[in-house]
Image (cartoon, one colour):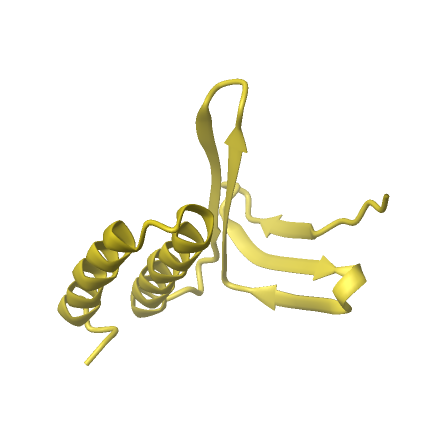
Amino acid sequence: MKTTEITFRVTVDENHLPLKIEWDAPDSGEKSECKSVMVALWDAKENNTLRIDLWTKEMTVDEMKKFYHQNIMTLTDTYIRATNDNTTADAVKKYFTQIGKDIGVLK
């Protein structure tokens, strides 16, 4: 058995707002800086999702719209792999394709 880590380092200002977000995953050789991170954890004891949503002051509204849209679409792919519920996934993708057009991230 092996243990691995993914690390996030967040530099904050005096009001605890993120100025810089860095991450690294040593096993994959990846290390970078990003403007936003969303982490969702399933708490089996509480039967609830725990979330950490952070973004830097430099992230624009347009970037956040794209980030949000892409997250929903990729979460739908994860949902399909986990449940094989293509009917619901197709409905979500159809709905969020329209949302993507409405918010200007898709043409």
